[in-house]
Image 1 (tube, rainbow, N blue to C red):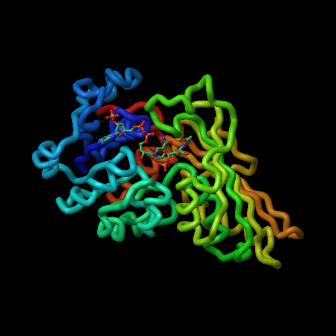
Image 2 (cartoon, helix red, strand yellow):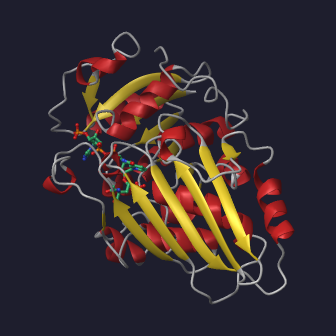
Length: 344
Ligand SMILES: NC(=O)C1=CN([C@@H]2O[C@H](COP(=O)(O)OP(=O)(O)OC[C@H]3O[C@@H](n4cnc5c(N)ncnc54)[C@H](OP(=O)(O)O)[C@@H]3O)[C@@H](O)[C@H]2O)C=CC1
Ligand SMILES: CC(=O)N[C@@H](CCC(=O)OP(=O)(O)O)C(=O)O
């Protein structure tokens, strides 16, 4: 599969390029940045010296002439770009027969009216939005294999949904009861562009975007249950933890909950049922999601916690899982033993 990555100068793009460089069924052809990028005319490894000798391809500015000339060479494209950019451009790639893996939120919400509210722009490509499929790799394999446009899940939604879905998919949760998701992310979650709010000296553990974060409708949509989502920013580089508290129906047993998690994940090697509360250090720089839960049958309460690397399972490695599924490969192909550096 011949691919391009748009957003190659960003944090997610860089992780993706590293993973794709190590993938023997995917050939990385072009690395794109924005039309006026400060990284234009550099090589990838000049910008990210950690990858010197791993990937030294040039960073090229995305433009309409580039699209017209190069798109016929491609089988797939990964967007690691701002949401509005992929919302504007993905359909054009799909129309040219190029499969799209969108790592932004440009195609995650089914209701187009949520875009102005949660993303701050009107979605102009409603056909593509209607055709896009959500790509939580452990749960939506068939959709991912059959669609031309995969909406790779957000970082917080990945950890939240891996926690919630074994329960909500079995309808074990008490309908109309409060489901609360508390999330904590490090500063790489905010991307590479400098900002005072995410400057290391400024960051101190704090909630943010309470009751208005764009991941709330995404989690509710995919869990098929309304949630309250409380994101927190913490002073470390990478890694994310989501802890979900929910009420279960009377009579649902600990064994039923345990069986739901086992049956969902026992044949999914990238989701590890750890038997102890997960820690960010155990998943940072890996494609794993570590999950643990506890049930109080008497109070009808379950608490589930999931830790992931926001840039990997929360973005780049999950996109590679989606590409693997599209290629008919096991979703973990090239990820389990290649979490360090690849070659391109
Ligand atoms: N960080 C995270 O933890 C996660 C991020 N995501 C999503 O992935 C996407 C990328 O995030 P992240 O890497 O953190 O962001 P960064 O800010 O680090 O990178 C953004 C990238 O997009 C490029 N870009 C910006 N504007 C345009 C444009 N108009 N045309 C083409 N390229 C453009 C930038 O290039 P340049 O500035 O050089 O022009 C840069 O390469 C976002 O949609 C984000 O929501 C998803 C899950 C987790
Ligand atoms: C710490 C921080 O700022 N995190 C980001 C979420 C990560 C991200 O980029 O969002 P997507 O997963 O939707 O693409 C935020 O809260 O907006």
